Length: 138
Length: 411
Image (cartoon, rainbow over all chains, first blue to last red; front, top):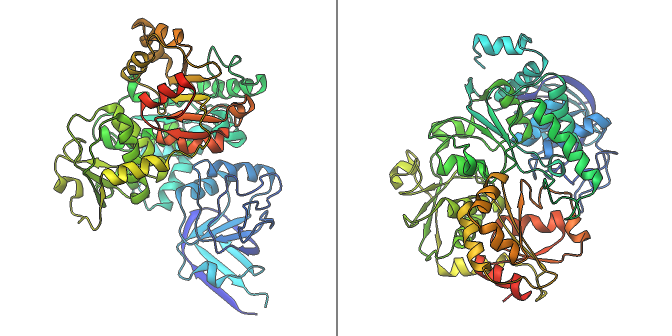
């Protein structure tokens, strides 16, 4: 089983491990995700119908309204938020959402996370050290 | 990040739980954006519409108030979801009104002023050149940065509330000199005759500049605060414009060289008669001839705008079934009453609504009352009115909108 370690930059503190869920497209939390179930509802999104609750969510960047931080916060309350997040580059709305909701998050890694990590991989995310340990299932 | 002794004490809990939590959030944001230090902010402006910040926003703010959060700098609010006198009459439900009142109460507990306007700079909250502030509200942010020359990032509610409670914000983005220079030039050759022509220009500027800093040339010295208010609101809607410069007008752009500083403008876009016409036409999305609603005051109307509407309505009557709303803060409502404009406007069958806005009120309530088509002179309103209220917009001059309210037909 191949193991890769990526190094990057802390966005929101904490450690978490779990199963990766990768989106190649940006994600909008306001009106893009059902906060009560954690299922992506944006029409024609590559993750439409997929549940992000508890997953290590890997996506390039956020998009959409400045209310997005509160949506992440609401999901954390409903226990439907991702367990951790990995971005190519964090935008202030997603970053603030992760920070106020205590969701470990990193960005600016030394490899493209959307490319290197595959859905279903086991990921150990240590935001304090800025490291992501990826164990491929295949 | 390098914190002062006092900031470290805030982080350690010496000033209570709300200050500690707020400082933790600000330090995390600062580290995320490689800020070297915190800066002291002079004021904050917070979103306040319960339907905008949602259940989670209300919860976040309530928890801050419960933890003993008090604002330590001048802090005021954006429009509320209810009109103080007319909410029942215009069809806001008891339930929505109660949610808003509970939410407002948390602001009062934290010592926040209920300005209830997206244009607090029209009622005395006027940051000065170079002053650091932490403001929400997409239309107020470019006004404060560009027209007044104060400095704010485009804050969401958590960023501005935590700044209100600590008096600090991390030093990054638009707080720093190097990020305030122009990125591209918009050369305005069209003749801008009416105030809404500035909104049309703003819509164009936001589209081409996206999240960069545009420098506008060719704007006449007669441009007013009202014009720039409409322009910035439009630019922050079609793009995420936080700061723009108008050469010869705004404080950081006495000359084009000053506006660009060490940067070289790599792109120039022309805004001529063709762009003016095409952009204006693109903002009307309605197709029915009939108009049943007219909205002015997005952003909230100034006393001068209310006078102009009163002149157009003087001695006229709105067509039956058509409503005309002017949105403004309560202080300007009082001013309009004193000046006699309120009488003229109400005699025509129109109304001035205070402290609120259809894009802060409950979602979909206008459609629920049978409204279908709105006319407005605000490019920002044309964007939000459909997703928030389900009405299709016509866009044009103040005069054209008033005429539509009188005839019931868009011409």
